[in-house]
Image: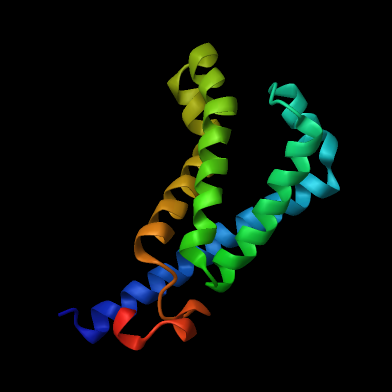
Length: 144
């Protein structure tokens, strides 16, 4: 059995990770709408993704909606799955070429936020939203 103090720390960590991951995805999604030529459609054209006009706004919408869900702790595990996919695609399409062309350290520098969001999304999927979330109200206390 996990002690009360240990469980409370676990819930605070879950909250902080949700705030981090949710706020960055919300911000990045909004920026894809505000600056489509450099953050959204234009960037998707530059990296060669198919149907960039659709994908730019599609990805932006998922980032904002899922970011809000993660941030608030509402269906956080489910919402983290598309974010995990977005970050995997981002790493493969934008950071892998840097690794191949410029080496590991350039890629590591460029990928630091992507890597953090990927790991944060995985943590949310594994541990859930925690006690300080909207999800808490939909589950029994023994599940938290």
